Image (cartoon, rainbow, N blue to C red; front, side):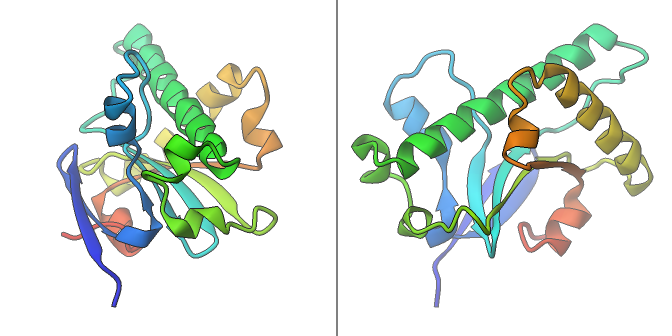
Length: 172
């Protein structure tokens, strides 16, 4: 039976199979990489490589457009940094591969893997998620100067606690 790790981030507890979890934040802290922000963790779930960022809330775009833009930029930067660390590990950078990258990640079949960026905001009502998904995608498209999202065929999704539970990532 697989060992389960419980991680609590931004008010939600994720229940994750240890061998499929790349908990990236401790690596960044250990290396004293000041100023490098990443997603909470990267998780392999079947043929999906999930880059998961959890937030308590999201700024209102209409009331605070500058704060909303900063928020989106921060999430985008975290995702880019995490993708770079993941690629370095896959390419065999020993300090990543040997110390923290689970063995399941070293045998990924990139041709069949779907990369997904999940933004988990636990208490967002279900009826707002469609609108938030569209806003996030629009903002990411503006920032995607290198076309990373289309190049890697990455999907971006905002989910709440209920959807995280349905996706097998969290508990109630």
